[in-house]
Length: 202
Picture 1 (tube, rainbow, N blue to C red):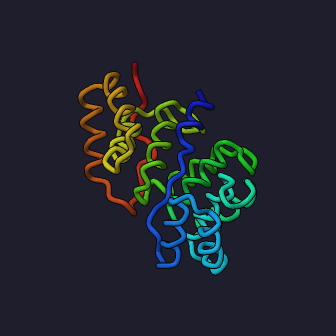
Picture 2: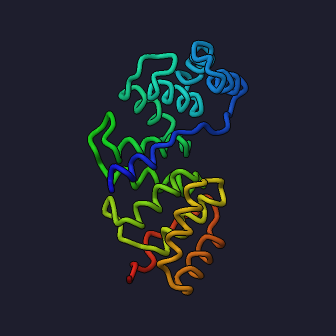
């Protein structure tokens, strides 16, 4: 189950840039012109731009335009993550969860997933939902919280979250579903997510 969860979580995506030059680099990256992407992105990454650091981290992670180097991927994503970029925080969480380039550390993974999820990052919300649903990484099994997280991820366009939420709902009571819907309806990005509601009782 842990391998399956890890495979489902590690979906890397690009999010909006904060500088015009970075936008050109992302456009080149998305167009598979990795040499141009590297020329555009690298100076901004070295200058401290979090979006550029994230993209450069992805390039190292995927081996696109540069040799594949997970240690470099982690280093660049970490620089972006500590600046608060949710996409990079999600990747750092995934790398800690899988033990990719760093010692496997599920507790740190949860911490980084939570940081990203609390900013509204759908992949991080989905990942946290998996961990709560399947009682992984030291988190309690909590159907209400898993449903809430998948509801948030689904609202942000995460397709897998829709199917997971529907499947989970079949094992929940009407009261649990109502509580989960209320939690997701009342939560706003930037606010802490609950850490526990009620355990599954089936």
